[in-house]
Image 1 (cartoon, rainbow, N blue to C red):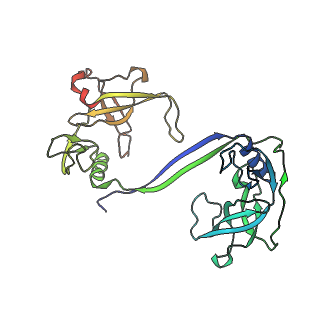
Image 2: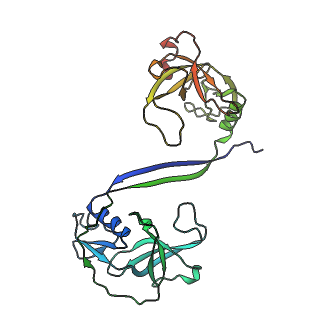
Image 3: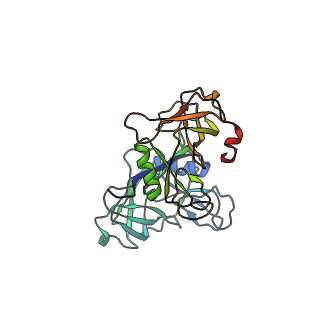
Length: 315
């Protein structure tokens, strides 16, 4: 077994935003298999449309309809598609200037290989079978045998039935986290119901979780010290918004806890007590669930509250 632990980690945030009249018309148009652009102050047709002129920053609202075919202006081959990308098989990322537009739109091109892609090739939109008013309504582009068309954009009022007024854009980061040697030792000890910190050889402070170096003195901390398991609530907050995929009913309390013998407070959930009775100075102890690798939460020990002077430096 490697000394340093690793684990897959996902950071995800579904960002919800409202749409202005320009973006609303563009996305609703995609649902109706219509591509809209906007005319800038210098007469150029911008696709995808922007609410403000990219050169002058003036507000622009004059919508026009452009073609569903266009010309590749540049491209890059993607041999290994990732989760959430438009196609599950290798494809090309392409910038496509649609007929009637003066700027290019970024999307995927379904092609058998990089030899089948070239700058200047003609492509056409492949529409998704189910369309909801999102950029994914364009499933991808596909090669087209037509010739370039000097098309004139057609004015459009941007009016559609049941317009799309908001979207949820999922932001997600998948990566492998390696906590380092010091925190790997800490995590392994937690699995054995022990809490291990490290002492600085200079200032003698004990840090939990350990960082491998003293944040004050900047020297390596290689002496392990068992702390706790009991500790003191130094400060806390009441959580009233339920997090996605977290099976904890709100409201609940997250707190900074100074474990006995530690010089740095860690944070954890407080349970076994009504949320409105949690207080600074409350003495708590860890609770492990069966088979758990780390404490599920901390609960009151029943001891008298700690004196403020005993933890004020750890707030």
